[in-house]
Length: 141
Image (tube, rainbow, N blue to C red; front, side, top):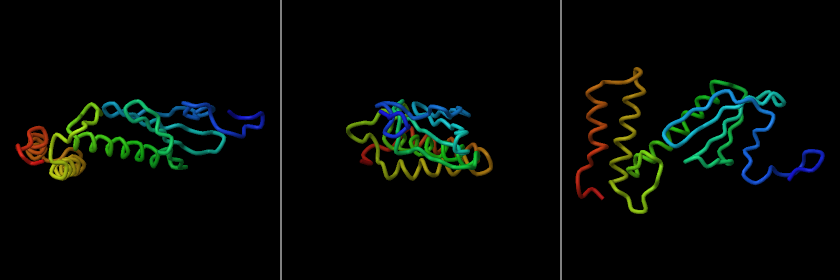
């Protein structure tokens, strides 16, 4: 707990967002990243929640609003990629891998690159990559 001068730690489970204004909540599957404006420090703060659990070590501070939104989106994309590598779009991790993670990682990266180039990429290539991710060849792991 904090003392009367504000020294100490936040209460357990607290995100420390007191006094900050929520600008936007980015969501991807079960994960969220919230961009806050801190008027006291004149900065933007990104707070991330993986599967609904606050990740305090991921807090990111910047004075550039576009940097804050970009960081929020990049973290969510990273988690989505990890979920896809493990064969789970709902964020739940498998105890045993369900696909070849190195092949899946390459396919996920190719899909993300195709989607980011030109705002959507070649529809046929995107469909082919999604099909390969959804239907891995047996015996790859």
